[in-house]
Amino acid sequence: MTATPWQQAVGDERRLLVSGFGKWGGGVYDLTAGRARALDDVPTSGLSVGDGRIWRALRAPGEQTATCELLSYDGRGLRTYQRLDGIRDPHDVCWHDGAVHVVSSWDGTVWRVAADGAVRPVWRGGTVPDSWHVNSLQVVEGRLHVCAFGRFDRHKGWKFDEQRATGFVRDIAGERDVLTGLSHPHAPRRVGDRWYVCESTRGALTELDAGGRVVRRARIKRFSRGLAVVGRWLFVGGNAHRKEPEDRGEIIVLDREDLAVVERIPMPCLEVYDIVAVPADLARGLATGFGANPARAVEQHRGTLREAAQRPTPEAARVRLVPPRIARTLARAGQPLDRHDARALRVTGSLPDRMAAAEVRTITVTVENRSTVAVATVVPKTIRVGARWVPLDASPDETDLKLIHKKALALLAPLPRLLHPGDDAATEVVLEAPATPGRYQVRVALHQPGRGWFGRRLQHEVTVADAEPAPPAGD
Image 1 (cartoon, rainbow, N blue to C red):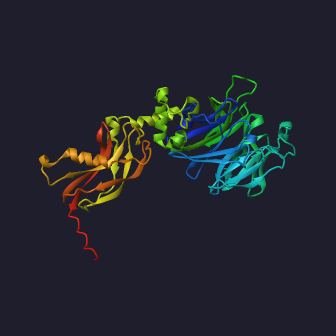
Image 2 (image 1 turned 120 degrees about the vertical axis):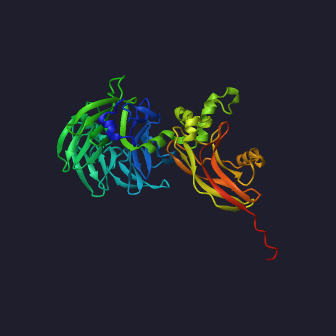
Image 3 (image 1 turned 120 degrees about the horizontal axis):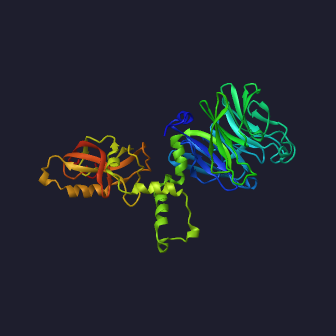
């Protein structure tokens, strides 16, 4: 299928992610292929990229009385989980000035979250709970901006004044409003000399100039929230119409040239919160989640296949940390590799020229996965790496290949982590020199039961010399 112009703009190195929630649940979805593909089913509000990670604020009904849960993911999977009891009703997240920031609508506060989980307020709007409905964060020219529905002095005063355009976007450090007269604004984005803002109750995406003057509006015909700008393309979130029980949210794609709607993509959830274009490896990490430990994910998958009598806990006590799709994918790493994929893995590095007889030394090598599948040291067919010592001075009849193989298997080392296609990882291999001096060819390669040694190996001629005698006692 030919990629659409907006898909070409996103490219192969990025993924377009959408967060959503609602009374029937939500999650994070990958929209890159032109349809919503769920990565998981954990309802989510804000998403942000920073410090080599995706940051994610979870969302659930009753957030005003619940704790804030903040997750981060790197390319391998879940990196951190932080429970931030001091933050209620979290909406957006944003990486700024070396820390992640969270905005909570209940207390109208922007919080700076330190690496140790300590939080401190950096800005507050309003003194009455959810009177201003502070909701979105955005960094513009190195300065953190926040937007809100208006300055009211009563709880949810903005609900009783929907017809008044009192919303604003504020430069926190500059202590000034940069945009005003907005109708329930969400997701402000600055591109060049233009601002783009979702005016939610207008059901519109509004373009403004640098001075805050409205230039154009595109009618979304839904409560608009969530916005990403990729080249000439605008991606706007549209929530389901609450009075239509069968309705769902959607993503509206617009052309920045004329703000024309070029596509409407249906969403499985009722409400859309955020839309972000992220590096492909981070999107993969988010999808992997707790599967960063592949052995645990494989055990979850194997547990679903066991007879009830072989399960250590009743069904009601089971915890599933990884989506079944991910668990199944990772479980394939414990199955025999086909010949094509086996040839596409290799070990690189350097080996010593000399070692003493019976010397034991640890070296570092790199395992490179250039295959089409993820590989890991997981049961039942575990992939590991090790070294074989083949004598060069002995005749073939004198070479006991079975003994060489047996010794090598005893020193096999596991892979340090899950290796996705295209990944590299450094790992340690134990070299145990033979007790007999001579010339040897050392072969460091990957091994899997049933397939044997495979892939492109690291090899080098190593001379094993007589070990120097120990000095006499007392010297």
